Image (cartoon, rainbow, N blue to C red; front, side, top):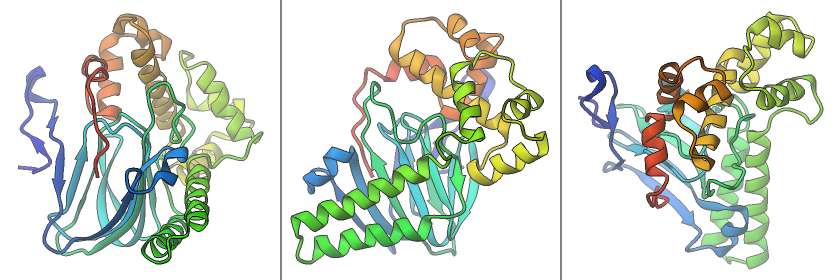
Length: 297
């Protein structure tokens, strides 16, 4: 059985029940810094960051992390759960995850894996770093983020000059912002997703998306796969679920009312899409918002 989740239960046995998991294994080497140790992280809303070199059985499952998460693969290979699918991640790749969405990753037996990571702390009313316009994964930028975090580590373990520590943290956050918002402001692609974000209930199809930004459907597909790690229609789904999370957090509307607001014809279809992206049903998501989920790495 997969050690990161229990056997399926309920609803005909087709919905996995995930468990919070922290497994390091005997050969794991980790360096991390959190906001309790370093107060300079707090202004950027960074809760925790670090550099890990790991082997199986290293594993992490976070059911409802309270902030955005970025993982940059530096060497080797691992597996990351991205919007309901386990994906192979190799050197140079970056994965991004929004807050309050099931987040999981693990080492592959026989494969040493090194990566840098940042986890943010973002309350529901704060605009998250990784949001509706952010990519699922990127093919560039991992080495840069790893070098900057390594620079912070060297300063923290060395002279620990307060000004230089702030400088390194500013660089880390600036790089994270760049990764989370790959579109140039004012570009046709950026304007397309701004339009979709304003109108998630519209019946978006690939031809309509392509017309909106004056590109061919195939060109738009290639750009999105390269820049977002998703197809255009997968990104529409992601944006709809992001909007649904906001409605679940900030309103008391029932699922039958929320579904059409984000482009779904019924609460059942909406719930299926929500579970794929977030890892729990909309009802469970709303229920656990009132609970306290401490940041953990």
